[in-house]
Amino acid sequence: MSFVWPEALVLLLAAPLAVAVYLAVLRRRRKQAVTYSSLALLRAALPRRSSWRRHLPIGLLAAGLAILAVASARPQITSDVPSSQTTIILAQDVSGSMCSTDVYPNRLAAAEKGDREFVNSQPSGTRIGLVEFAGFAELAVPPTRNRSVLDRAIDNMSTNPGTAIGAGILQALDAISEVDPHVQPVGNAALNAASAPSSPFPPGPGTSSGGRGSSSSSGKAGKHGYAPDVIVLMTDGANNRGITPLQAVPYAVARGVRVYTIGYGTTHPGPLRCTPQQGGFYFSNTNFGSGGFGGADLYASGYLSQLVADLPPLQEVSRLTGGLSYAARSASELKKVFANLPKHIVVQKERHEVSADFAAAGALLALAAFGAAVRWSPRP
Image 1 (cartoon, helix red, strand yellow):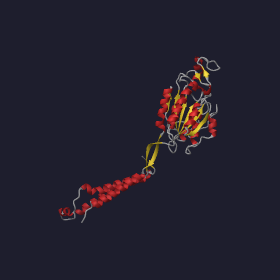
Image 2 (cartoon, helix red, strand yellow):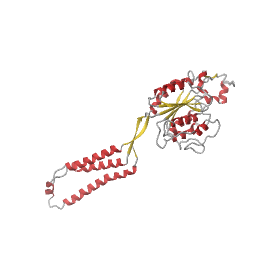
Image 3 (spheres, rainbow, N blue to C red):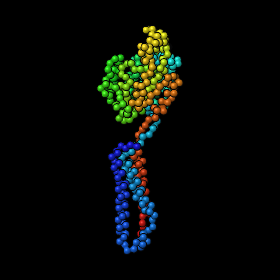
Image 4 (cartoon, rainbow, N blue to C red):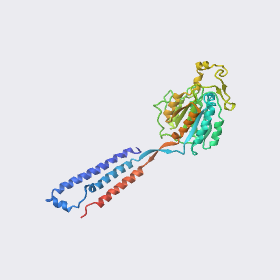
């Protein structure tokens, strides 16, 4: 429980003060009673009342005053509630490595199937958008409730060179800002710089001069708590263009947008085989591209590191923004990851003020105290 006006809790002192006054009055009455010559005569003259009835009114009054004091501080409770205003941006990696056949029939085809199932499993009121990123990021489908539009866009995804994960996060944030007025846009300047092949990216909000997100500047929601909007980002490689994922973190934290990341694919990529519609990549392990690299040469050149999901930065992005990070090495694991995501997305925490409930309870106790005093007060 939290309070809007915690300073008002000082009024809780009214309850023990009332009890103290009551006890002082009782002592004074006892002192006055000894002035009578016959205590037995005094007891006989007074009506008989049990001790608990005699003290019940002041007990009820003290409890009522305490609860009214809590009500004056405007208490709030936090609860998990389903959100019908959620916007989900699916940020999908469409780099050339998505043609790897270590996931059957290739990573892109399996990802498309998982994306469609995820989209169609969401509540009808949830808006979903699609961001595709390779060497740059672009908004393929603005947030919409039209599932058929999303399905068509997912089916038509094609691969391109490069992996700009940080730019994908910024583009997703900008897409959310179009439908949620509480989320500020990132801006064209930042988006253009994010996809630049080799240029220093300016520090984002809450970063140091180096422009890297850190646990000291992140890890908490924005000023108004978490937004109901989230980003689900899937990638099978390492960032090699523009802004890094950690440099994008402060932008998400400042807007209270959680980022759920999925590191996709195995650590042993297969031959790259995509249909012309998917981008047309067709490289084998023994003849990798025009350079004719052999398998051993690929490892030596470091190129295969670009075909394996770089999990540590993804995990850090999710941790700092309040999301969760997953790894999926197969189509079945990807399906399980998508099946678990709605449990964390469609439920959000909301604060509800319960001042009226406390005020009503305090008033009832005060009335009960008055009624008890009238009911069991001594009569002549």
